[in-house]
Length: 213
Image (cartoon, rainbow, N blue to C red; front, side, top):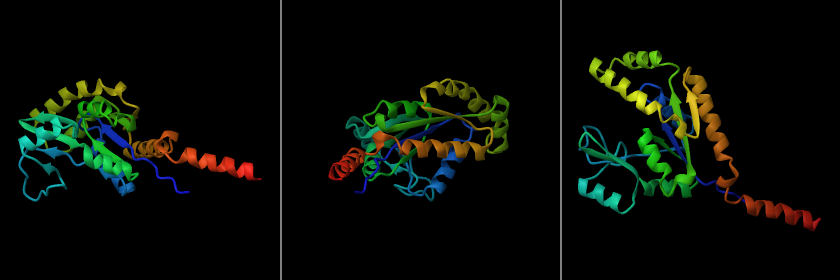
């Protein structure tokens, strides 16, 4: 008998600069079957972006209608545009035994954990080894102005305060070691008894074999 594992929702959160996006990218390369959650947004597509690849581009009416119909796992308004995670593609992936990876902040993670799919969530918070190292990493990107860096650092304190809401915490002192810890968590969660819907039937089959001896 072939048992199909139920897909799970893997949430990665961290303050900016702690390494969340790097770990997410490496995890997708490690397991190509992992599905990355594509967000919906009301902002206009940028040059080179395609609907369904970078984002699902929606009008505000379409987006708000999806929210009203319960079709968003989480959503928020950022700088006048709406962003959110559509539920449909996630449910389809779960039914097919595929896991979905979310690279989102603590607020989005909180909404997903409180949703109808919350019992299938595995949440991981990534911490920097120190605030000084966090500042160094943000500056090392050479992408942001001093004002933007200061804003990110100020926001980090609030983000870090939510670490205890997560199932697991990884301290990213070394990205290779942090990635190994991330893979270990995912492997273990995939083997949980309640994520193997055919397991009870399989064990009953073993018992029938005992009885037939």
